Image 1: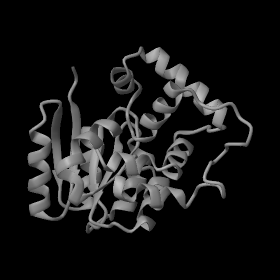
Image 2 (image 1 turned 30 degrees about the horizontal axis):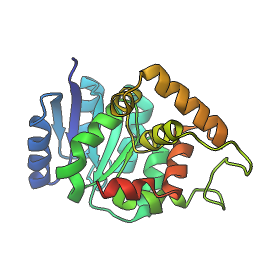
Image 3 (image 1 turned 135 degrees about the vertical axis):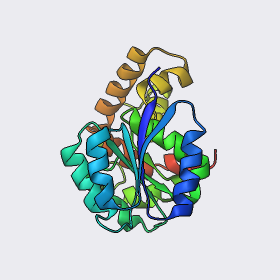
Length: 221
């Protein structure tokens, strides 16, 4: 199985060393580059084309937002996972709009970094459970159900579970293993659930999950 290739960018040596240790401990992850500022990170990411770029928000050269925009525009095969000390939900939306696929607090890294890397590498979205609800509920509709209308057919238990796991960043393959069905069945459950609720994009699924406390439940696991 191909390893997940990661570039790490952080200007704090102690943090860099700690994250390096976490990444190197996983045989499914390969750390292919390190940078200590955004200006150094961008050409490195261009050169090695990693699957995931784990980047700090506050860096010299290019800050995290600028670097995310550049990587998203210039390196479409690389997904950005933001790693930061900033717990203010106001930081999340600009970074996600810039193209970041994950937002993880540094204090959560020991528990959630590898899970976040896998989720982002597989095409999912990962938001730190402690801020996800507050950050994404801000963009929900007035009733907390973006795109959902009254009178729609209710979700089946399988459809609800599939949608919840998608919102939490799991890939179709991971969901299939967790609920013991085929990947094709997962795709069917997702399509049916999204149609019933009027959710067209992954971002809308995440907002729906945030409004319904799915990330709060995740934080308790």
